[in-house]
Image (cartoon, rainbow, N blue to C red; front, side, top):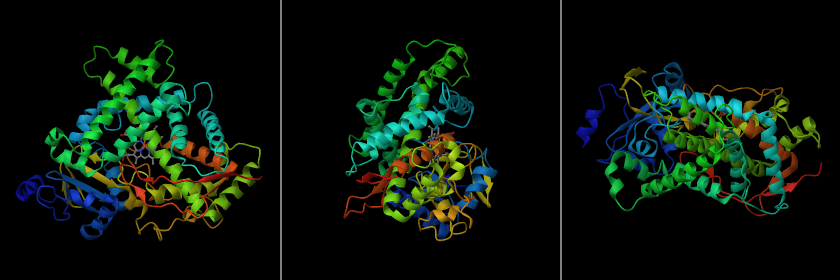
Length: 474
Ligand code: HEM
């Protein structure tokens, strides 16, 4: 086996920890893979390799290595790896997992145009987000300051913003079918980096084993796609080709126009994949950020007090926050940035692959190599951050209290495949966070402090916790 693994690594391939026969380094990824990888980079260097059971992946650590590859060699590091799991899930089509090429360009452009256009159809997007914020804080108010788990409420509110763009409407917070779909979809985000998923990628024949978490992943995916197919059908009823109402209409227009064109990537199947990817990429990440932000506000009442002070001085009690206020709220900006840095919502980014043979820092990396971007290691890079293990919004402020951008801050990654929803996510986080904290004081039920240990998956989320949102006296 060793021989076989070696054969797959060309001369000059980055070194890495010794693999166990057959399964390579897969077992080391079971607990906190991003932390394990950062530790390994201290031994083997910022660029090292892992054996994932017969195939190799290159891991990029620290800001310098990630910038070197994702930015300076942008075209080379912009593919997605053709792993058996991804092939089975989306056949490397759709948007997020699409191979770097025409299909990806068509879907990325269509999505980003739709965000711009359907986001602000009828009224500006920030106003629509604010309307959702009102539903959100009113729903929180129903708990009357008593302990509740905010997970479902945050998920529903956040997913409604992408729903507006994709389906042209919001879903009420009691829509159980939609909630169930999101729930099993996010379970898959967790399962996608489980040991079983890595094993499936190394040994696809385990598909035929009747047990294992990968089976759950396949069952969930089938249910999600089935649900999406039906909902897409429902929302495309009454479509008039020159008057698209939302992303689905626009996609179907493109599909009609490209009929007979052999080179097109638009298809019914890719519509389902891209809708699913936009829903989950938009919901899971922003929801987790807001859930961590709530948790840290309750954990650090002194930081929360400063947020309240800034909100009161900029808005007073009656006025709702708006995007225009962002510039006048450097402390809120600093807090949200520190949550993104410290909590590492997508700790390993989304796996990349090389489009051609390349040379980086003296290492040979062949075409098609899977590349893992350890974004956590950027946010904990001692070269750029002082005392990175401390939660401190002040690192984003200068001595006059102005907000300062920091270079080694990459929660949305970098380069050609960087997050498509960054702009939208920033708007949502600011408006949801400020609307919520303007109305409430957040605290844990007396005598409790929740765990800060994240639940592992493609994204990091807090374990379920209870919190009290007590109306503020203004
Ligand atoms: C990709 C983070 C919100 C849509 C990504 C990537 C990261 C990321 C790290 C991987 C990029 C890479 O390959 O290196 C985040 C964070 C968010 C967020 C931290 C919120 C706090 C959103 C939202 C949407 C979205 C709101 C849209 C509704 C996407 C898409 C991709 C992506 C479509 C794939 C891009 C491509 O392959 O070309 N995001 N994201 N994200 N994100 Fe986000």
